[in-house]
Image (tube, rainbow, N blue to C red):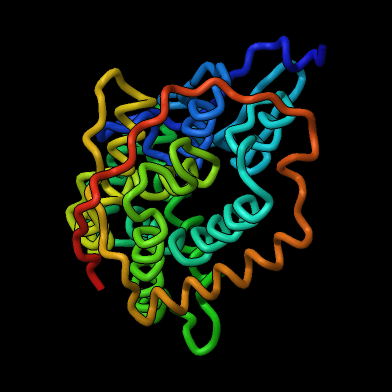
Length: 311
């Protein structure tokens, strides 16, 4: 038996609030995937320690291994035979990678802007939260350090000519993010999860991105307002929290209308194009021996009634 398989696994991450096990997107992704795959992981928040500045979170410690970044951690767990994607087809595996790329490109800049660049949200929510979880004198350093990193990342991702300043790219950022949310809402449809009755790595990534926007008490957020109009996405988050992070049972998410507008059509074509390219190259999901992960009983599909999706 692999030495790492017998070793306990510890996940270092930011702690929870707002009804979430962590307020940090990447930490949420890994925690959700661990739950979905049946991996027994001990969560160790870095709150109130010097690691709030020095550590790269999330970080999975297992024996002599220390793994960072959600993609790397999920691959490590798969090698330990904790594979939430065990039942996916090759096409579904390619779709998963395409949608994760879409989240990174279209939604992450708006997520960073909402929490770290928007002045009202930063002053009233983000900065006080991270300062209160960092020991003196790091409480003065951690929020500003993370805010500067977020701003630099946004400009690196979206600051192409002629848009070089943050005020010039804000409109594009939120337009892309809303289109991405609409596409996710359409793809999820009336199901509890993106590929049927059991959650996979795509569900973990979508949950990690959406849950902080949905649950945070943001003073100012057009993105949160838009998300809360997409009932199946908010119920998707509530469902995962209820099934995997509490003893409560979830309420079934409402359905959405089955038609797409022009923006959804365009984004769907983009995802399908990326998916087709990835499918030709990728067989990593099944490259190592796996066994079925332990999961809770699947939830029933949603009711057949349909609601409208906002533009």
